[in-house]
Length: 305
Image (tube, rainbow, N blue to C red; front, side):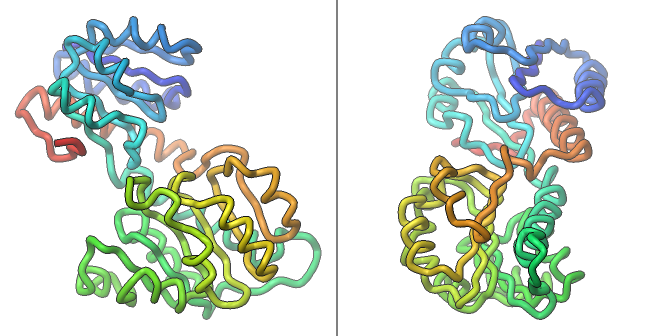
């Protein structure tokens, strides 16, 4: 089988070597398409591929249609909104992600940003400490659980809400379970967002939701840009000068948010998974999942129906 590794932003060299080792050991061929600049290059490369590994690259309907032999696409990372799932299903292509491989990396970024925010972005003025504050985690998957783990070391009081995780499942991790999303926002000093971008969650973090937070609240987003209702959050931050917003996904309205001096910070690009370890882990996991699919028909991490 021919496995295409298509990455506009390539994996680290160690990750590429790890992917090659895994794929070749299973008797398959590896083809690299790195730093491509035109979509046509991807369309041409996928034509005779049996499998494809991507990072943030778009596997849209046109790409999946071009992959006439394609049987599986694996997104090396947790999010999979860059794969057209309906198109994948229509073409009988299995779409998978690699959950958990970058969860520690994202959790560490959360606390790097939080310390920066509570210390007033190191502007020389007195800040506050995280210890004793109430941290709310919205979505308690792999990343959320790692955020809770790190939070314990800071002495935070940790709460979580996830519509798909039971109260018992949350509390078994030593975390207090909120009864609802609203209760989480009303209770906590800090909210860390970890929900995926779905039809239900896009634009859901809006004026009404965030306005429930306490005075001096901090909202942090290391999930997806699309979950934030940017116009409404800007309006709220104009109305409430006590709220801070920090993110590792630069908003479309970055220039407007940047006017809120001392209350906003965004990294230049998404940084959560940008570590050598996460890069290697996700790439090798993707290779192993492809091998398992071709060997045993394993679809454990399938995200389409």
